[in-house]
Amino acid sequence: MTMLGGMQTPTPGGTPPTTLLTVAEAAMRLSIGRSHLYALMASGELRSIRLGRRRLIPESAIEDLIAEALLVEAGRP
Image (tube, rainbow, N blue to C red; front, side):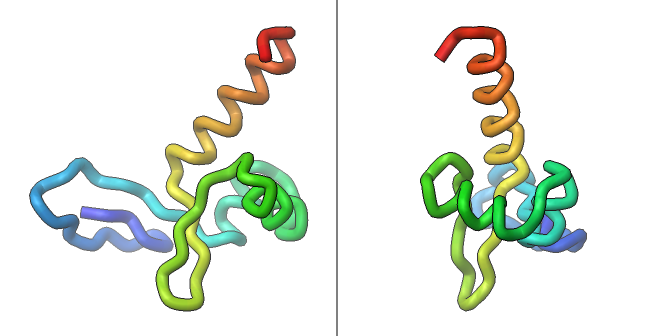
């Protein structure tokens, strides 16, 4: 199953669940504005997928962004 905007949808082949967040949800989780979030996606710092006209961000991409920021903050690029 996949979480899509708070809804779970089945995933093929029994893969583990993935939570996909809308741009607004991801921006809220990171406490940043939508423009900053779009800039992170455009620069490749934040992974996202496109489904139709919607841009969705896997929750794991947010976790990776935070982990990378913590490493840089600690002085380990």
